Amino acid sequence: KKTIHILSIESSCDDTGAAVLENNKVLSNVIAGQKIHEAYGGVVPELASRAHQQNIVPVVDQALKTAGIEKEQLQAIAFTKGPGLMGSLLVGTSFAKSLSIALNIPLIPVNHMQAHVLAHFIAEETQSPPPFPFLCMTISGGHTQILKVSAYDTFEILGETIDDAVGEAFDKTAKLLGLPYPGGPLIDKYAKKGKPEAFSFSEPKTPRPLDFSFSGFKTSILYFLQKEQKKDPSFIENNLNDICASVQRSIVTILMNKLKKAAEISGIRHIAIAGGVSANSEIRSTLKSMESQLGWTTYIPKFEYTTDNAAMIGIVGYLKYLDKDFGAENTVATSRLDI
Ligand code: KG4
Ligand code: ZN
Image (cartoon, rainbow, N blue to C red; front, side, top):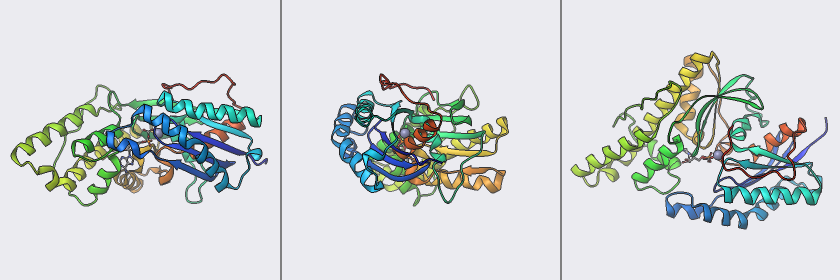
């Protein structure tokens, strides 16, 4: 079998990523985050695209250097076409196009959400990839979906959020608690020291059983905090760990109940998670415990492939390369793109 080297670029949101894959193996996976957004409590699109401009060349250089691969050895360039912030996507798209012309190699546009799911096909010593069909709950800052994945390019949405994404529920709750953006990882951290039974938040109802709703959930936390702070102005600082543990437990319960329903309805027992929120330690351990409880086989991405990264773009690039599924020179970035 021929050895294929693919350079991949990710620039959909606030992280600039570049990776080099040798077939389905990751040789390098470089990511430059953007601290600048912390102070604003969220990603500022204009600042994100400027930072991508600054980061893209050094990040790509670093990825090639770490992999020990020269540009001339590359067989294709994969890049994130969408969904994401237009100004951010344009930086990666333009860079990828230029390099593909300069090196005279194919360009492979990749759907960012498919990439989160297909990160499970990156070669790992510790875990084999899920067999088709499997279920994947994609949970990130922009998405919350339960997918039935029947092939590399066949995704059926069984359920999805009707309002906020679960990552937003984490980040907005964190903001209410006075924590910087993105607050998800901080809630995870403080929750480890708190009591998850301390406070309870009710599970939102949705018209369709496999859909999610998080906007009401966030509002109920806001009202809860306002009420408690009226009684005790230092309520948040005195109870931060317990609040985080309780909020996190509620979110995990919501996610797991939906996933159990989806497994029941579809009869599928191979269950994966993907996306930034799948970095959450309680989600990971709870899902794992379903193996013995419900007889599931679970697929939990390696930590570095949960949040945005270019290796996941590279694996989709490789799978598409095998199918000769290349993009045209006039391919454009698309801020909205269905899975
Ligand atoms: O996939 P991702 O990096 O970007 C999007 O495509 O949205 O996901 C980012 C989201 C943010 O909302 C962040 O707070 C959340 O993932 N996140 C976490 C954790 N790590 C990242 N949420 C909860 N616990 C974590 N450990
Ligand atoms: Zn993402």
